[in-house]
Image 1 (tube, rainbow, N blue to C red):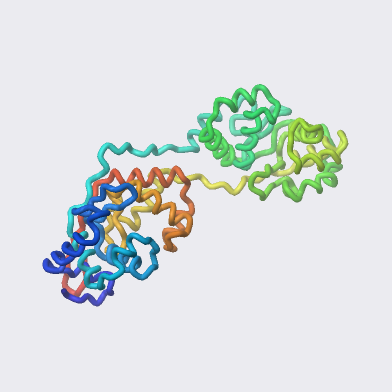
Image 2: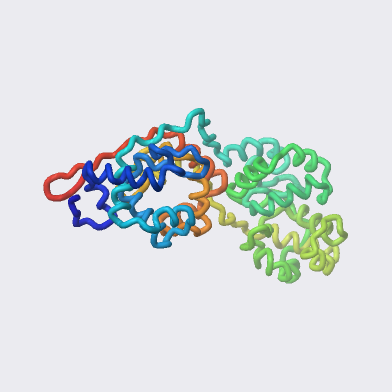
Length: 378
């Protein structure tokens, strides 16, 4: 075997026919029970390794052997193998034809939750305004609301903890995904002051509103997830909500005491003060679509998951039931990689499932590394 100057992990790229034959012998006694005779796994949660990038396979085998990747089955399988054996096994599996795309696998839906939220919000516009900024006294603005607060409010209407027959009927027809889409849509709409009058004295309400600043922000702009901003909200709605907390129609121990301390005039003044403040958008990012995610993943893992880098794994035609837990492991920090940690931290549960299903359906292509003059590879 030629010894490359590029580093230990690239040694399998220089394997010859005898090395690969020796790798097959080792694989047949060590690896086939889990990964299959041809490197095509038939076991749930066990990856295909046929046609995988040789340098990557070698690096992972060494990581199992040294304990850098703790997994008892793999550690036991490679514990007593010499490094030459690891090199040969990696070269052997890399020489095989990769798996075919998952048979009968359905294409993951490339749903856009923002568009779904917009569609659902069409039924809300008559009362809350087309863009979620109210022009109806007594009806709250929804634009710029914190998504957690929005979802909690919808759950309260659905359960009857908030007493409003119209909202209860509307909420009853929404599932958790629909509520999340609505919450996202309204959170990303540009907030504005409600186009409604305020009967209280905003200047007088400023002092009384100081007690609210710890949770809702000094000017009614909340920085606490799940706590709504009050700035620019319809004054009549704010006053009615405060009265509901005061008299127990809305049950919230955090709100009960501050509301009870306000008389009717102070409630109107505080509502007028917050209604006069300038609202700000919450810190909510538009989620990436499946097309956005795969574009990011393909930057490293190659077109449609066919890596052209020896040390970066191919994802094409890989088992979805292996890809999903691997992505979860990166999300939780159980697998260590600065690049994957940064990428996977932004993934939602649905993103993980969609990405795994997407790559399982891609056509896997073997890669050949060719020595060129000057010692490089292509």
